Image (cartoon, rainbow, N blue to C red; front, side, top):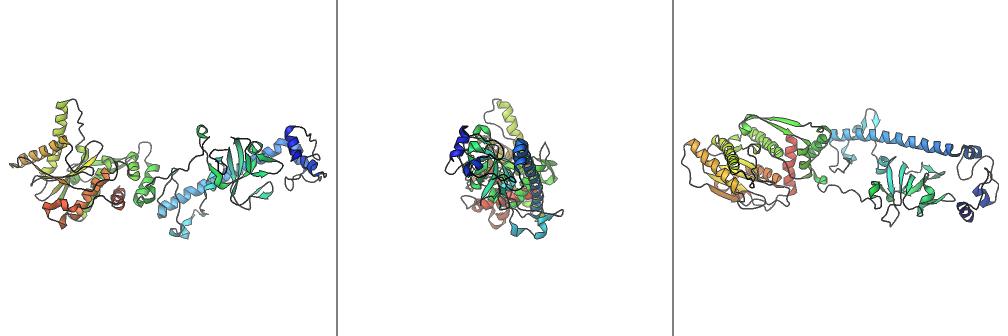
Length: 480
C-alpha cells in the first residue's frame, strides 16, 4: 500500500516492463513471458508497448459484443411477446415499458420455439446489458457513479482473470459522482475508489444497480417505478385490446364499427381512437365512444336473446351537454329543446312495455335515466347523488315526454313522475361511466324477475365490486 501511495503521489518512478509496481512491491523480478495480474497470453511486449491502443481495442471489442447481445435479446423479446399475445399465457401486469412476464406453466413447450429459434426468459440485467445504469452503495441515498452494464452475472464471466462474485455484475465506470468513495469490490493495487475506476471495468453488486435517471436528477437514487395499481387485475380481453391499440392506433389510425340501424334508429358509425382505449384500461373517466360501444354490445345480446322489444337506447352523441353558464340564453334554450326532440323521437317508436335507456353526461359526470314513456315514469340513477341535481336536464326529459304525448295524441300527466333510484355509489371520482354501463346491464338481466313498478328493488348494493366493474370493461373490450 505504501508503494501504491507513492505512485499516486508521483514519488515513485516506473520504467519499463520489468520495473512494474508489483515488481517493486514484491521485490521479485518480473517473468519475461507474462505480466503479473493481467492474465494468460499477454506478454510484456504486447501490454507495455501496445499502450492505450491495446486496452482501447479490448474495450471496443467487449462493447461490440455487448451491443450484439442486446440486439439478440431485443429480437428474443419481440418473438416472445408475439407468442404470448397468441397464446394468451401472460401476466396481466404491465410496467411503464410495456413489458410483461410469462407464466411458464401456461405455455406449451412447442410455443417456446418460433422460427426454429428457442426463446429464453430474460432477466432484468440481460435487458440492461449495454445500457447506462446508476451505481449506489449500501445505506446510501445518493448515486456515487454512472456506468454501463457490460456482462451479466455468472461464473463463466471473468474480470481481471477472476470469476465474477455471486450476485455481482460487471460494469464499466463512465462517470464518477463521488470520486473518493471506495469501490464495493476493490481491485487490489489498481482501483480502490470510484475516481480510480473511471474508464475501466469493475464488479458491482446487482442489488445496488438501478436504472439511470437523467442528469438533472442524478443526485437522488431513482425510486422503482410503481406499477399502475390496477394493472394486476385488468381483464385479459382489455389487456389484449390495450396492447393492440398501443401498436396499431397511432398517427391518427382508429377502429371503426358500423352499428345496426335499429340500435339508435339511424345509421351510425362508431370511431374509437387510442385516447378512448387508454382511459378504459386504466379505469379513468371514459368517453361517450365507450358508452356507445357498450350499448352496441348490449344490443347484440338482446338481439340474440330476442328481447329487443323490451328495451331501447338513446345515443349520447346526439344529446350533447349544454353548459349552465352559457351567456346566450336563446341559443341555450334551442340546444336544450334539440336534445328533448332527439329523446322524443326515440320514445315515439317505443312499445307500451318498453324501457328507454338515456345515458347522459351532465358535465364531467355520467348519469342514467330510464324512461317508461306510456306510464310517464322517469327513473334517475346517479352514482354520486340520490337526488335530481340538474334542472336543465330535468327540463329536457320532461319536454321530451310532452313531445311524445303530443305526437301520440295523448293528454298525459300534468307533471311527469320522477323516481330517484338509490343506486350503488361509485368509490371515487372516475367510475361514473362504468357504473352507468353496469346499471344498464343489471336492469336488462333482472327486470324480468321483478314487478315493473318496483325497478328500485333491483339495486340493493351500496357499491359495485371491482369484479362487477371489470365484467363490463371486459365485455366492451371483446365487443371492440
